[in-house]
Image (cartoon, rainbow, N blue to C red; front, side, top):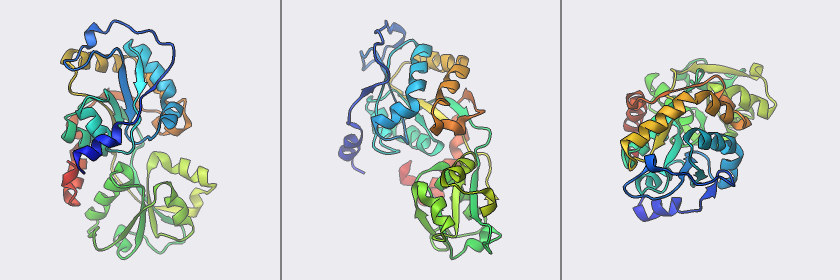
Length: 296
């Protein structure tokens, strides 16, 4: 994608997290290229200001208190649009999934701040209970519903599981990126298997009015890397460490505010830890294996 198009993806509009927040002295938050009196925040896989406010409004308010600085939302169009925004200083902090993180780190040299370690974050490959498919190898010649390209639990991790099972993912199977419609497609026979994160499995079943008895978990993958808050590398080291320290110190408050939205329930029982870049090498390896090294 050309840079001009990338820039167009993120120059949308900036909406405030909250209203009536008094500007503060941000002398400890100085950047060589910014005199702004607020931080800009977004979530990689949430598009539009309305969804950001609905799902992360309470968190944003909490983060403002923890960092003692006003925060504004910066909505983006798609999962990777935050990369040029980080690169050109248009956004300060982004909550990213593992796959988005490796892209942001590679393209924009984004710095990992704090990871949200989810205790039950595994990729699942699911079939119908009446399916004759009992092993991953038997998916050869079959159709699999995945979430969307670049999704950690809904694309990259399941791809790794299939490769490890000896399948040629380019020739042995047909992959359909169905977003949130994968479960419905599996239920009505439109696909043979479906991928989902373990901590979203029950939520998806409930939303469709379905039961565990209707499906069988064909395979469970390994614990996945954590979601991670990344920060623009144009900020000074002392500011970055200050933000990291405050978020870890006040993680109970921040996690509680995340759970205000029903869409963030997979974070139930999570904890915040200092992010470690090496934890995401498995994602880099999958990108290379499937011939998508250009993402990096």
